[in-house]
Amino acid sequence: MTLRHQLDALAPEMTAWRRDFHAHPEIGYEEHRTSAIVADKLRSWGIEVHEGLGGTGVVGVLRGKRDAPGANRAIGLRADMDALPMTEATGLPHASTIPGRMHACGHDGHTAMLLGAAKYLAETRDFSGTVHLIFQPAEESLAGAKAMIDDGLFERFPCDAVYGLHNEPGLPLGQVSVRAGTMLAAIDYFRVVVRGVTTHGAKPHLGIDSVVAAAQVVSALQTVVSRSIDPLETAVISIGQIHGGTSDIVIPDAVELRGSVRTLKPAVRDAMEPAFRRVVENTVAAFGATAEIEYRRAYPATINTVEEAARAALAVAAVLGEDAVLPDEPPITAGEDFAFMLEKCPGAYVMFGQKGETRGGTPVHNIHYDFNDDLLPLGAGYLAQLVEQELK
Image 1 (spheres, helix red, strand yellow):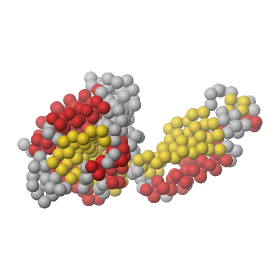
Image 2: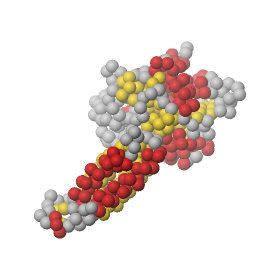
Image 3: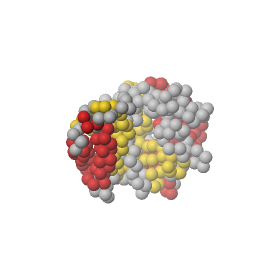
């Protein structure tokens, strides 16, 4: 049987794993059940297991049976395990059983695909060298990749290259975005507290209106992108939260703004923070108010190295055919903490389309989202192919 046929045969088992993970979602650094299941399955297939990296991370170490010049070479395959703090509304038989927790980004599917690849590779071991199977916690805004790196991931499990993937509901099933360079944006978070002087709503002249100043900040921040950044570059500033006041007739002394900044290039990212601070400080000063600014750099841009992107494309083509490879899809302004791994090691991150005729098209981070199980053998096949291709 070919690799693809063997992974197709494993699809029902992968589907069962995926739906079990989906029904029992765990958010970042709380993936105790998920990581325990992952570790148990890897051990049962004769794979060396290391637990507790970055909190709840798991690494499986599998060595090939071939004796060849590349026997010292190693690659890493990464899947994320965490869910989101959301309440599911799919009504599916395998829907979340935990209120306020939901696999709304498909990490349950990513974990099942890497397990499927691991089982196949453990049975065949038709490669030379070592594959590190990296099951990562806390991708959703909590930087689990960085936590694993800080815990010695690449010192303990050195990799010549590292590969990751994600499902993409915006692309048809069987199509894969693989490009050199930036795949996803850097994400930075901010918190701005605009401080004025409280007063009765009937006598605004006796205070300093923090609400009016904050409202002007919201509008003025959009000029950072339109007037401080090259129009040929990409940057996004979004306000996600506004909090202030406790009464309809009192002008509050403070209003809090929270949001995110997204950029595709390090130079643009570096330009955003000073421009952001300048606009906020000068805008509130015009109203006699002041501003406290917290600006936190979260995830860097996810940037594929040229050679590894080409190798990923070869693996996709081997499993799905050359027509499956989409090398010119534009970057996405969402972020990914796999970026931290790519800062330490060459590698590539690819997006697997999952939109079928009747399912798989609901966007991620949506209460009606569900992973398309038809993608499981395709993604697992790609991961297994990478190992056999890169560790010949």
